[in-house]
Length: 355
Image (cartoon, rainbow, N blue to C red):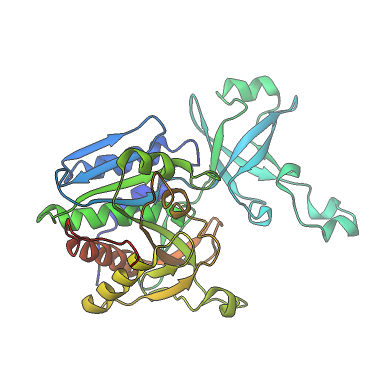
């Protein structure tokens, strides 16, 4: 089945590292305004799109809009720019990459540099690169010249990798994690907008998940919305690549459908209902154990206020936290279908309290 992914491509290509999500969030809200009755943003930068605001129960759908990136820590007298990671990078994949610096005067292109292998001694050649020992070269010859480009300490940057289409229905992008989650929650409420369910449904493009060790924007938005139930959409490890241990992570494949989490922040009653709906709708899915933490927005939502029964739906993703993450498009739409069907089964009497 072919799908129009022009909006998804715009969303993936918009720069939005954690703490600096404005551009990507703006693209998301512009799309939401084409069908949602209410579209808003809050002081933290979370974006909200609501369908059937007077409905019951209150449902929160969360997908984080931020991506990992880099931030300037120092500019030396020779014009070299030093960096720190925003989120969890493997520094090996940064070496030699082009970057886009988001300066106050507009985008500036740079390249990540390190000492050439020819100039390293034998011991250094075997050492892994560290982010703090890399630098960005914008072509400037002095600190003043860098400043004339509008670049300051604290400016964020992203790897310069736009979305590309691969064989079949697969795409690669630097921002799969978790721009696709923000896409899925919006697609789910679009499926509901023409014939609203009993529930009030709010899709949230949350911020700062990659650095939100205390809950990020998911916690503040859940506190404000007071949802009766929440569904988080994120990515998880696709284990259909070489040298991945399925005994630890489970068996999850591109095209295998959404991955439903059990344990920790993932409420078992919500999981059981999601699984039942998937089977009734004929949608493929796999199950993932999360015994301690999900490492997603679910961890920032499920204990908000008096507690929120929370489900976690994940998209299988290859090459996590790299400039070229890969997913299956059909997994996105199957996830949105599952969530929409789940919401249609909710009534004001739905109760997830364990008995």
